[in-house]
Image (tube, rainbow, N blue to C red; front, side, top):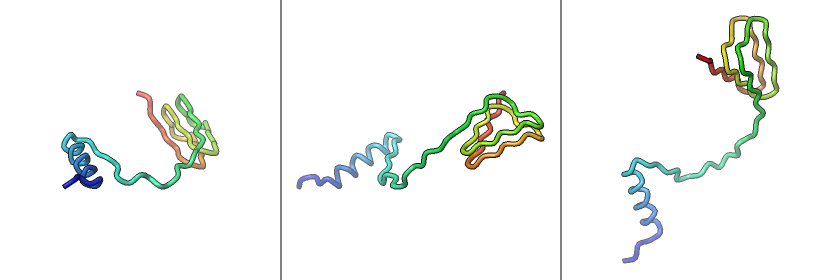
Amino acid sequence: MAEGKHSKHSKETVEKKELGLHTIDKPFSRKIDETVTKVYNGSLRSGNRISFEGTVVVLGDVNAGAEIIAEEHIIVLRNY
């Protein structure tokens, strides 16, 4: 009996799982939107304000009294 296409795919999937590899059986169908990002390198002190029509990424501290206004996401990555 000849091996069908389905059984060959299943055999590959089992072999990959045995190796600790995972596959995505169903590709994503949703379109990924593009965004604009502003990166601020430094700490924001009291009285500082950033306003942006997109995503804001701060590479530093945000002290009390500082303001970040964004239409999308605000991401703060503190420096150590």
